Each structure stands twice: as structure tokens, then as C-alpha cells.
Image (cartoon, helix red, strand yellow):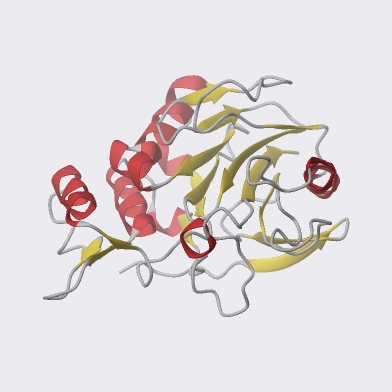
Length: 265
């Protein structure tokens, strides 16, 4: 099963962020929570998603606060489509550009992805200074987003898989990600041994459950990322006892979006 890697809460410019000890200090990074923003219920309070019906002025202020907390000059983001395309980010990224990941080795530019049950994956290479932020729902996970991230870091920046440090952030956990037979079959077809390795769990007479982070971890290790360099959050966005996260599966469209970001400093 996934070895949990508890995240620490740190506050930057008034915004609480979850940070991973796996990511080197030469990279500023974090996973946002609901706290620290200005949005009103049901989006309270640090909603970073534009499309759910929140007041755009509140979302804009929330982004401004996160930018201040990130310590970066700019935060790149893209229009996510549950695929595996990764863009090499310059100083500006058109948010109309469709992709599900960003990578860069420039200093001072934040790479971000938005989630509300999907996995935010952050990668850092302390040798080259390159980093990446990836969005992986179940479709992106099965399609190989974790693998695409490693290959982008290798091809774009000359990283080696054993150099990489990877943090898998809060997402819907095995405990709550109940799926239909077609989704369970997609995982078992994409990864032989998915049931034996704990990716797909099934009890007679009940729907299967899927562990996104376990699949991603196994894929990363198969590509040569060292297991001790992979930090796996133990937080579930759906059933977190303190209701710290947005969850589309739990709240539907009456929810907001979280963000995972990383930047070379």
C-alpha cells in the first residue's frame, strides 16, 4: 500500500499551505486549502477556480493572495482537459492553451495546476533546477501523466529519474474513490497487477475503489524514480475530517478548486 508522507502546514503572507519535505528548499511549493481567501459560502474561502459561479472579484483576489504567498513574479496556468500534454512554460502562459502540466527551469515563475479531487503532482530536480506541476484525474492517471512528467523532465532539461523529487498532493483517496466497472477495468488493463498492488480494491457485492496515488507511485518507480524520493500525501479531499479541501465528488458544482504550485527560487 501507499506509504503516507504527512504534509506540514506553513503560512506564507497569510495563506496556509501544505508543503512536502520531499521537495528541496531551492523550490518554493505548496498545496492550497480552503482557508486564506475571501470567497463567500459555498466557495469559502480560498477558491482558485473561475468556472464554478464564484464572484470573479473574489477569485481574482484569491489568486493575488496566492501569488504573494508563492513569492513568485508570475503564476503560469493552463486550461486543463484531463490529458497528458505538458508545456514548457516561459514568463507567460496563455490560460486558453490546453494542457495538464507545466515544466520550467526558470527562476521566479510559478507552475500551477487546479484540482478538486484529482491529484496535483509536483516534480523537482535539484541538480538541474527544473520543476513541473501536473494535474492527474483518473483519466490522466491511466493515460500516464506521471510517466509523461518524468519524460518531459528528462527530454527538456536533461534530468535523470533518480534525480527527481516528487510530491503527490491531496486528492480523493482509496477510501472514497468508488468507481464503476469500466473505470476499474481501465486501471487493470493499463497496469497488470493493479489489484494485487492495491491500486484497485474490490469487495464482493460492492463497487471497486481506486487509489490514484498508488498507481502514480508505482508508475514513477517503474521509470526509475527512487521510492524514497516520492512523497505521498495521506490526505483525502472527500472525507478530510476538518473539511480543509474542495471536493467535486462531494459537493458537485457548489465547490471551488485547490491549487498545487512549484517554482525555482
